[in-house]
Length: 115
Length: 113
Image (tube, rainbow over the protein chains, first blue to last red):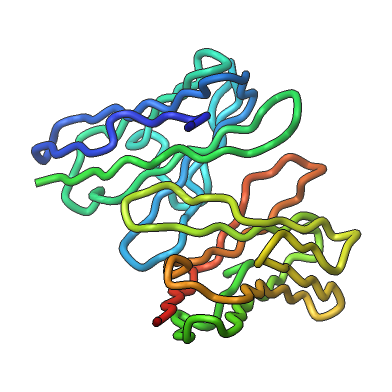
């Protein structure tokens, strides 16, 4: 079964609203979580790295005020897309690193559609 | 600047034949390489990995070869099956540094029966 769970798997929202995506590690403590974004027929692009209890590190070109990342516990990281616009429509995927083994696990992804 | 490149966007192979997917990288600090399989609207599924101290790793029908001097790796699938049809992503990281995976653009493999 899945060891990293993302919720929701699909979300449709109106332009201007905010959407929160959750990423949970189910049976391990994730000291580090990564957020990726994938456009159709494109690669998975790293957006940011979040370490539990500290601020996320964003990749160049990713707006930190638009994509708010919170990693408040060792099993949960959230990505909030604020004031969403149609160009934010994408597939968002999280990845969690097992703090003990170093293994990386991916969530199932969340499809965001902004109307 | 793309650090991980998959120059073939697609590959078509007949069932039973070998599929060879290629990947090149530019960052000599990468020490860990992985291949993932992905279906639309799903997260990537881990297939096989290789550490930079090795040049080959085999798992069933899947074999990954690493040529560090050429900064090149390849995934061989033998024999190919229709169920292998998917997008395959090559990824690399600095494992000791604990960095995120950097992905290539993917290669769509189609295996026909």
